[in-house]
Structures are given as structure tokens and as C-alpha cells.
Length: 294
Image 1 (cartoon, rainbow, N blue to C red):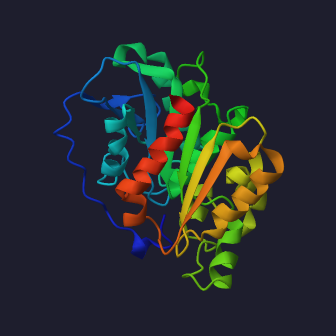
Image 2: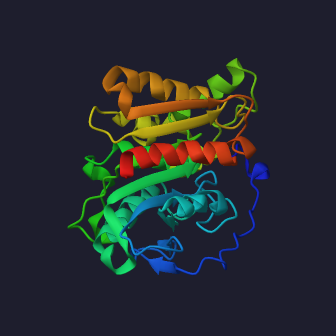
């Protein structure tokens, strides 16, 4: 996620030509051409493989399942996971809750078609960064919130719950972001503007629609039976301040068992970058996923 249009950067595509077992651009619903996913399998093994569902970032208004950032998430292949990249309707096409509904529809599609693609539909983790981190957390905490289940998108007979989640620096309370940025002198406080990514995502200036903002905040839906979640955030993030994850975790501490969430502050790290992509940190993420999916 970035604060303004001028900050948005179009990322080059990832080169996935070296992955032999893959299926690209599979439609999981028929409402929009955006509703497609890619499936990648480990080079060896017959499965069924546990699944990492990658949810890309891009300020809710851009990004793609095959952007170069995918390469970081594809590292899960070497740990025996299938990796699925999912596209969803962006804010220029459809406002909230379309993106959340799309990802839930993708999860139902995966379960309905798991046998065909050597997938284990009973072992699914979602993993996303920035705007994708917000959607990841929303998927994690809203399995029983029927407003986010649009069965017109297909496969109504399958659940959309997941078994684990990894949230990289996703926003959790849109209305608090500017105050947190100002308080800690981290960066421009413009998330509340009428043309900010968050306002575009919700269809109006966020300060004018506080009740709708609450519906888009993962903070709203924390419950004791939510699946395990790992949250990682850079201490120097000037786009989504680390306080967004801190307040998320503080609320979780009040409602759920402490063994159901883990929180890492990556000291000195910003909005993504080498600290997240390092061999050591990927090993840390894989250890969390292995604990809950294997």
C-alpha cells in the first residue's frame, strides 16, 4: 500500500518459466476478468499438498498475482507447499467488500477443485502484504461473517475458512493511520484524504463513513476461534505504521488464546524489503506454517 497515486509503482512480472508444474490464469468466478488464480506445485511429490494462498498488495487499486513480489512467496514451494496466487477486483472496478468476497470465492473454488490439482483443501493458509495483508487478516477473522460470502461467485457448497494466516504489514484500522504516522513522525499522513487508497477502496472519504470503515477493519472481527495468525511489521514503516499491527495484537490479547497469534516487529525495516524476504525470515514463516498445517 502506498499513500498517494504518485507513490504507486508498477512492478515487473515474476519469471515463473522455471516452474514445471503450474496452471496459469484459471477463472475461479465469472463476475469479472480479474477473478483468476495461478497454481504452482513443488517439483517433486504427488500431494495432496498443503496450500499457501498469496494475496498481492498494491493499495487495493493495483497489483497482480504474478508481480515480481510473487517470487518471495514461491519460496514456500521448497517447503512442500503448493502456492496459489489470486487476483481480485481492485477498487477502480469494485469497492469493498468485493475484494474480500473474491478471495473467499477463490478459497471455495480451491476446495471444489482440489483433487484435480493435487491440493489439500483442508490445509490452507493465506499470506499477503500491505493491502493484501489487510485482506489476509479479513479472511482469517471473518469465516462466519455471511456478508462476505457472495455465493453468486460460485461453489456455495464449500467453506471459505482457512487454517492459518500470515499478515505482512497490513492496515487494521484505517481511521487511526494518520494519527499514528503523525505521532511517530513516520511519513505523510494522507490516508484520510478523499482520494487516498483507503477512501477509494471504500467508495468515499473514510472520515465520512466511519461505520463502513469499521466493517473493513480486521480489528472488528477478532474472535476466540479464529485460526492462528503470524503478524510481521517493520518498525520504520512510513506507509502503514507498525502501530496498526500493535493495536491489532493488543486486541487479540484480550479475546483469544496467546498460542493463536505470533507477532514480530522487524527492527529498522520499512514497508517490506530485504528484512521480510531474507532466508532467515522465510524460514521463520515456514516454521509457523508447518506448525499449523503439517
